[in-house]
Length: 251
Ligand SMILES: O=C(O)[C@@H](CO)OP(=O)(O)O
Image (cartoon, rainbow, N blue to C red; front, side):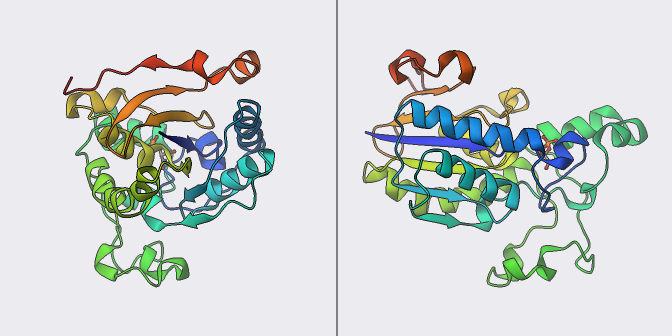
């Protein structure tokens, strides 16, 4: 039995400003920092332990991971950063205000980009200075793999090899694993793990700073899962309190 915890970073500056963020490397807000510490303290109080941790190459996730591990006195745990866990690349939308884009281009279009499985945002041109090929942190990633605008489906295709080749191997060895990533890279992973139908994908949202815990019997067998919500009220409850049995799609 292994515990896998998925955590979206705390609130970022562009979350607060309601701007398309994607691969833009923005900071956490004060509230985002508090969310990260609170998640770490909750996991500590519930006696969680991690053998390894994974995050993206974006500082809002990296900083959240560090704060969580610090709160748990686990800063020594081996961690890996991968571009494959980055947020969905929002292409030419990055930087624009979501509500303003809805007014200008239509709410339905913006909804399709933000919440459907296949909605693909307008791409960045290869010469655009915001293109990841100009960013030193991606210099070892083959150019043809670097995205310039992704649907959730594209994000899943990028996240999945990292899940299968790296994170899964740890779960297979019954390790307890923490993954701190982003709203859409985690939506993609949860879509896969929970076998969520394409029509249900728009309803799936991942909140900032709330740990999503899976108890896994092998990499493809979820025994049960739950969010650890309302930290202040639930801090002193045993972990067994949180779980309800999971029905999987093929059961
Ligand atoms: O802007 C983004 O990169 C993401 C996450 O903050 O936004 P959305 O939830 O709209 O996909």
